[in-house]
Length: 95
Image (cartoon, rainbow, N blue to C red; front, side):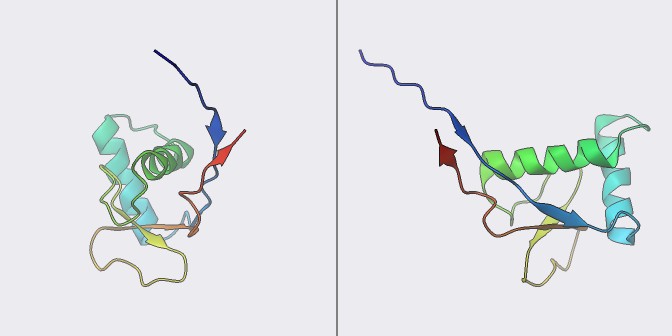
């Protein structure tokens, strides 16, 4: 049996307005999901980036947060998190 191990990296660029009503609602929902009142916006954004990296589908609902918008595309009508992702978020770079 042959085993190969690959190391890869990627980048997920998220844009948001921390003061927007959509972002604040998403953060409140995230805090409720993980049951921590002191959860930070940073931890929520890492959760979002991890989901996008793992699943590679910005049109999928991110549990506890809502939908993200693809840069230069219309915002989702329902459950929009106020977070926008750059279109190349699913690119991977192999070393």
